[in-house]
Length: 81
Image 1: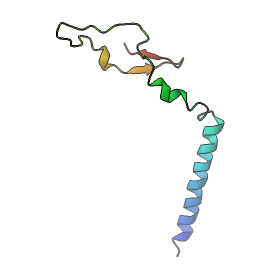
Image 2 (image 1 turned 60 degrees about the horizontal axis):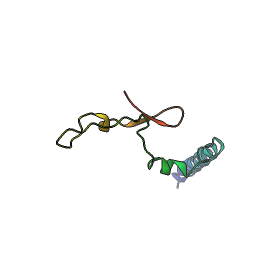
Image 3 (image 1 turned 135 degrees about the horizontal axis):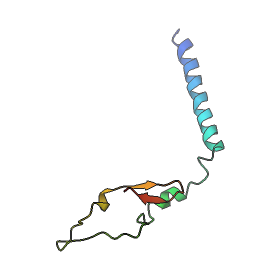
Image 4 (image 1 turned 90 degrees about the horizontal axis):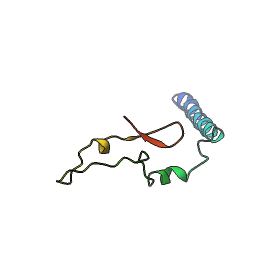
């Protein structure tokens, strides 16, 4: 029975923290745009216009396909050097 004196305030504190985190996320705009991020994966991430080189055996010769795109501050994606 004495464990309830510890668990009940701890559960209320965790619940209050979750409510606070949700309110903070809503107020800071984290949930404003729910449609664009899933559609961003469908876009072309090769914004530099560079083409991949293919040798005669139809294999990629550059390492461009191994580099992940990095988001820039403008919201678009750029390739790492």
